[in-house]
Image (cartoon, rainbow, N blue to C red; front, side, top):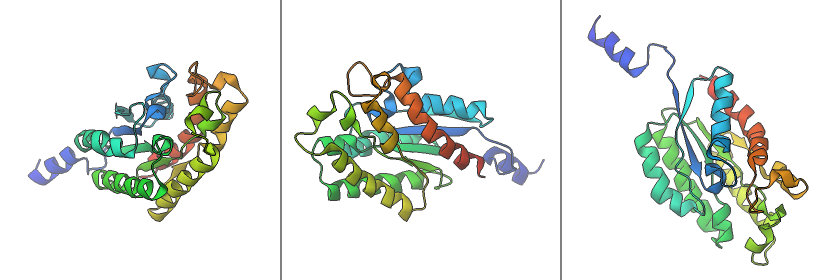
Length: 219
C-alpha cells in the first residue's frame, strides 16, 4: 500500500464513515438543569440519532448554570478547540438578557462565538443554532425579569440569533414557541419552577432532532 493511500485512510478521505464528534455549547438549558444528566436534551438527541443509524458520540458538554456569551467565549470555546468536533449545537443568551447585557453587545459576542465555531469545524455548516426559550411563562420566571417584559426581551435576542444564522446560512431549531407550553403544563417544569423537567427537555428535543438529522444525513 503506497503512502498516499495510507494517508487517505488515516484522514478518512477514502469515503469510510467516521464517528461524528458532537460538542454541545450553552448554559443551564444545555447541561440539563432540572433533570438528570441522562435526561438533558443533548443526550436525548445523541441517542435518538444513533437509533436512526447516525454514528455520533457526545464528546463534550461544557455548559454551566448562569453562563453568558462572555463565559462561553472564555471557558467553552477552549474545550471546543481541543475537541476535534465535527458537529456543534449552540444554545446561549438567556443569562445575557437576565443580567442586562444590551442587544448590541450580545450581537457582537454571539457573532464572535459562531465564527469561532465555524473555523474549528471541518464542515462549517455543521453548526446548529438553537433559539432561547421563553422562561417568563414558568412559575419562577417573572422574578428574573426585573420588571421587564421577558417575552419581548427574549424575542429581541432571538431575532439577533436568527439573523446571524441566516447571514451564514446555518440551520436553526426554534424553541421559543414550544417552550411556552411550560406556562400551561406543570409537568414540563422542574421542581425549581424555572427550568424544564425531563419531560420538558424531551419536548424540546422533538424540535431539535429533525433539524439535526437532516443536517447530519447530508454529506
